[in-house]
Length: 409
Image 1 (cartoon, rainbow, N blue to C red):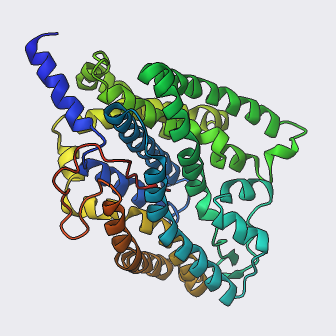
Image 2 (cartoon, one colour; image 1 turned 60 degrees about the horizontal axis):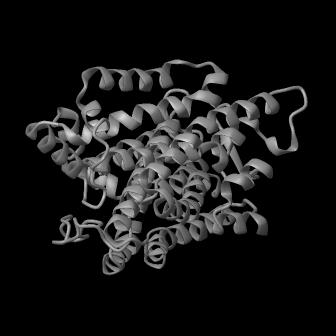
């Protein structure tokens, strides 16, 4: 490798280093959460909200793995106590507030909730509860074309359950792999997971859409594959793999790939294929693999090179929306419930109320809950930007004692 190539590789690794604040990732979070919000305001087939969720998964896997791997490289260990403390401060306050408020509002409007539903929401079991038992809303209102069901308050929590399961399992496995065989052992396991997952989805697709679906297929077979941790783990694993490939000094083949026009074009082609191919088998079995492979190249390539898209994502408004994306993801669901209950017969007004309430509720959540918790997280070693200025505290760009990852979707 020439001196110029070595210098560019070092610049790329610094641009991709998850222990520093990367504004473009907040911009990508903004894109992801806006897709989710829009998909719940429009017919589902018109807006790819699921694509936004998969992008959230990739970003979470990337940040979590990169920061933990960097901590292990510096110290030879991972501070699990600090890591889980930061996760608790990041997730629980706003999450508990959402569960309590949305559940009580649903009850006040006339719906009913059982004890098992409350427990599943509070203990991050929403995805498997929805698969096996189903969150059934018994609250409906009159719409322009008949009765319209008000969404169950806890069904949106499925993706947070997937991420929480990842947070519980992967750090321990990563630590064991790094100690036993270094980053190559961790990368090998991630590659294996990414290869096995579509095979497992294919098996489930064949069983659950066959003449005699098994009891494990749940209430709706599509939800079994879409929302289960065991079928979506690779969406986070691709982000984890990208982190290992991007920041290790030994990975000299991956970084040049990010600048190759052919690789970038292939990644964009894969993203397009995920949108354009409508075959049910492809969408349940291969879509997440195709999107994961695309993100593996497209997201790091976006971060290492100057582009109009990157400048757009780093703008003040996208970064602000990205920083509020956890609150937006939670509270847009309650906003949609209230808007549907009050304005089901006026679709345009329903959307206006939905968007306005989403902005209001998520802003309140950020100011009253997330922002104070962010200060506590920073005291515990988080590299999240200052709540007052948006800047990273000097020294925070170096690897912290543990990680700060904003879970999404």
